[in-house]
Length: 125
Image (cartoon, rainbow, N blue to C red; front, side):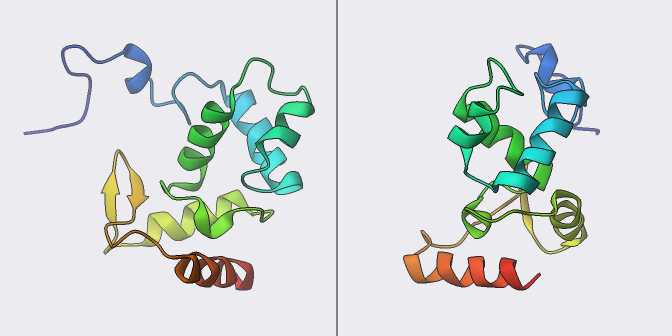
């Protein structure tokens, strides 16, 4: 039985198969370019550009998760990233746990040392 597709009570936007529900392709491209210029987590700087009017910090965070293909952004916090490369790396992970198509962390709560290690690994890519 195919589990994809809308279910009773789902918002239509959840199943429009856009890069991020509620985002146009142009807005997703702008966010992608902003992440490359300003870095992941630099939501106030991205908002200050005025290029994504009406988008709240939570929407920028959620859009970034969908663009990168992973729920936790800790490894990329503050880094200017090649969104396509990170997405391709995440799509290539065969043993990763996923939720709604995003790679998720299922281990213990990350420590500061773990986050620093992840950031170092991300910088080396």
